[in-house]
Image 1 (cartoon, rainbow, N blue to C red):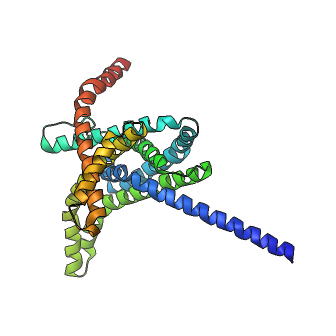
Image 2 (tube, rainbow, N blue to C red):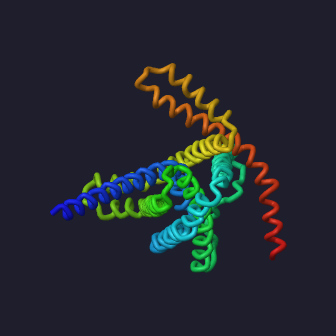
Length: 322
């Protein structure tokens, strides 16, 4: 009997350890996913443009192809690279995060310039589908979307890795895997819904027996451009905020604490100006606003450097290759 009780006690201990590990995994995945919010929102805002111009019956298959490649990139390629990085070269993480944050600031600043200067041409314009062989055009669009997704996925996995504070490699691996699969499902599920909302609205206007149902369908069709604009705007703000935040925290990890300390001081000063129950919200809002402003400033600095110095080099190399 004593042996059985000892065995049950061991099983209970193992169960407690497993439960604690599950808590670590879920907490790490949740924190890592929230850190990558800016990239996720922008990904959801940009991806629907890759199916623009194709027949409705091809929209979901195209989205599925991109989503499947996205999961492969995150789980099979980027996750092992991220674990190797954290195990053997953790000092590389802050510079990589700065590079990813700079990319977000650059993209956000490009979108801001596009609004302020309508004639300003983006460096990576989402071109409309041109006339030609539909199969060939689809292949081109899918390849372009997968390349863009790979860059965004690399940012997501790097940002997520930096947010996971546990030391056990297997917990990191599972948390990163959950983040990669979960974010992909969230993004491309939302993209599929967004892309098909027009069709849903039109279907309601045709089959609705009640006037309210048909009116709802017409409202969906008319409202989707506004939804896309709001999603794009939120994505831009989130990119600048997250990009600036990554820069501030990564610079602090590399030893330059002045930006982080200055923003924290400003946020605390602003929080003391409001009632105590509103202070946490004020602290977060001021910190996020400062990060976003820093993101805009850094992005505006990067725009001419990248567009006039970096991209022409790649352009000339492509021409030489041809």
